[in-house]
Image (cartoon, rainbow, N blue to C red; front, top):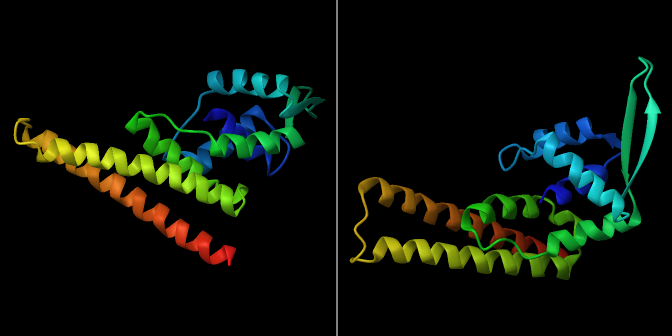
Length: 175
């Protein structure tokens, strides 16, 4: 997911690693907060794959800064990463699906439909699994477990409702 966020930031402008980190923090803090230790290797991978380029420049204070920019291959990779399947881990799925949905503008109509369908299908599966545990009379849940599972059902229901709203908007936009 870090590569997706880096590519997104670089669609706006050329920026340093510090700037990438700050941009991700300002827009995606509720979902993720990557460290510099995660950013640096991701930037190296993206540059090695030709998705981004870098240029070094001395600042007025004499400090060397590295600026990163997006290539055509990077724009293509951004779309590929948006359409890539997400983890089957429900916890990772929630935050990563929110990130993908917030970047849906980079996809065309049918690509958006594909992403929405994939995300909604998994969200329905995860919600159903949580509901099944809540409703299973043979599983003895504590009060706290019930509350947490009920909240999980609500989170997935909210995500599904949001996706359905995006689907309606996308269908109306396509006409």
